[in-house]
Length: 139
Image (cartoon, rainbow, N blue to C red; front, side, top):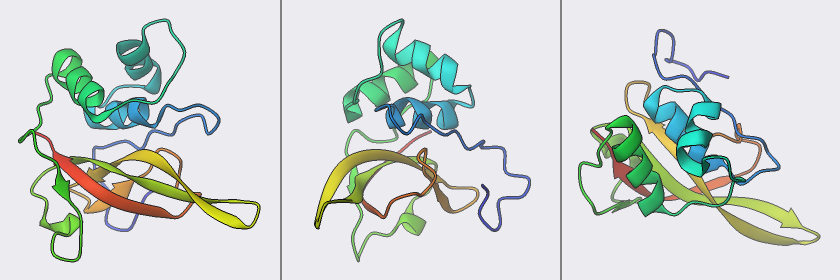
């Protein structure tokens, strides 16, 4: 699933198992240009997938793949700070929205900002509405 303008882009989309909490591992795979299997091994070893915090995702990117955050602070995405203001690939954090009966609920989710393509890459494949709240730029 490529967005318009992605032809020739080297970042490969990686999709997580929709029933497993592995969006962090899928984003690591996209950013490090490795398979989801390799990213899972780097993150969980032989253990089961589980939700990852920002520090863990950044630590794995640095230790295993030599990808560094350009700053330890994440940028809040708002009306004043837009994704197109970012100067490099970024790890995005946000919430997917889903309906539980009649009520809308949020589930925290990792995504990737593909700077070259100027698009968001969602390891779930954009099957749910997403609200991006923060970004950590990477080098």
